[in-house]
Amino acid sequence: MTSDKKKRLVIIGGGFGGLSLAKKIDKNMWDVTVVDRHNYHSFPPLFYQVAASGLEPSNISFPFRREMLSKACRGCSFHYGEVKSIDVSRREVHTRYETLPYDALVLASGTTNNFFGMPDLQKYVLTLKSTPEAIRCRNEIIDRLERAAVCGDEHKRRQLLTFVVVGGGPAGVEIAGALGEVKRYVVKREYPSISHDDMKVVLVEGSDALLRAMGPASSADALRGLEQLCVDVRLGTTMKSYDGHVIAFSDGSSLETSAVIWTAGVVGEYIGIEGTDLKPGPGGRFAVDEYNRVNGLDDVYAIGDIALMTSDRYPRGHPQVAQVAIQMGRKLAHNLSRPENRSPFVYHDKGSMATIGRNRAVVDMGKVHLSGFVAWMTWLFVHLISLLGFRNRTIVFINWMWSYFNYSAGLRLLFRPGRYPERKYWSE
Image (cartoon, rainbow, N blue to C red; front, side):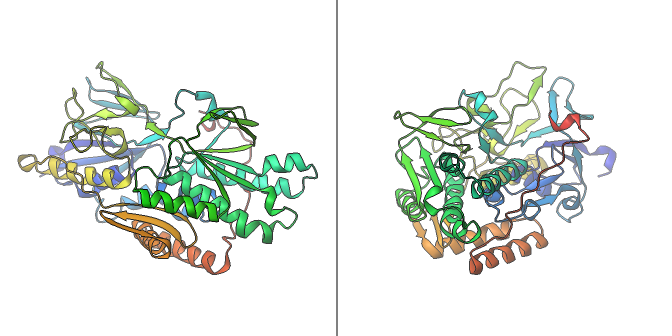
């Protein structure tokens, strides 16, 4: 098939789902364009390690343009830009820099932080939904450690060293465990002027268990592992407010802290759609049929976290995890490449896992539950092979081994961008 007969497929978002689709779709049939606000693919499961100074941002990121040169993506193109709106009547995608026509459109933009009706929180809390947010979190954690090390006011020092993590899902458990390791292993050696008792790590979860999406054994193991790392876990407790200085909880208690890390929920990335009255459904997700077609729109599809596909097994939609996005991307690639043989999407759950810290992890695979060192090694292996690029895998492996034998990541470096010359897009 010649290039002028190819249909134009635009994929919004180069995450797990978007890249899986781009790799698997028939390039002889489709002219594929991937659009993303960043010029790199990130690996969200390891954002917490960037925040905890365990890995450099470049270790978990891979340039889209280099990926476009790979055999799997050959024939695809990458366009840098944040999508501002979609005109379904004219079949156009409008980014900050250009207008892209399409014959078929795939929404794979993922999710962002959900503040549950408290928008002012984004002014004060630290978040972990992107590489820049992870870098900011790392800088703020290091900043507080350095300031506390030279602070003569005991009250101020305790406020600087009180870290509160909101949300007991995998991201919350992992960053809380990483901070617990900083308290247990790092502070004594690298910050001798800080007392072990001055640093406080609190994990707040509104339900009665951690890692609710996993089994009760994993929840119990995660709780025990965090307590061994001196993390104060408060179950059945929700946050009422935070003003940048004091965090108030539903049980009437409060804490003075200058560092709250928010991992409590997600909502679909907002995309303005013109030419239709269609609006996203619960959680900012687009309702789709069993073939991932957005209900009510022609030739518009959604995959991954932003897709809401309900079934008897998943009445509230599929879990918002990487495996769902990857499998949806692959199935949609098959259906678009072979429409005469298309088949509905069926999710195959390969299990869930989370790490609590050194030699501590939990893994659920069907009826099999792993914990401790074996689960931790399983977690390391799965995440290592999931990274893009041989260089990234090699560097991450070396960093992990170095940290394992030396109890130190050695990356607690405080880099901040210069303020001038000002660039308008930095604040947009």
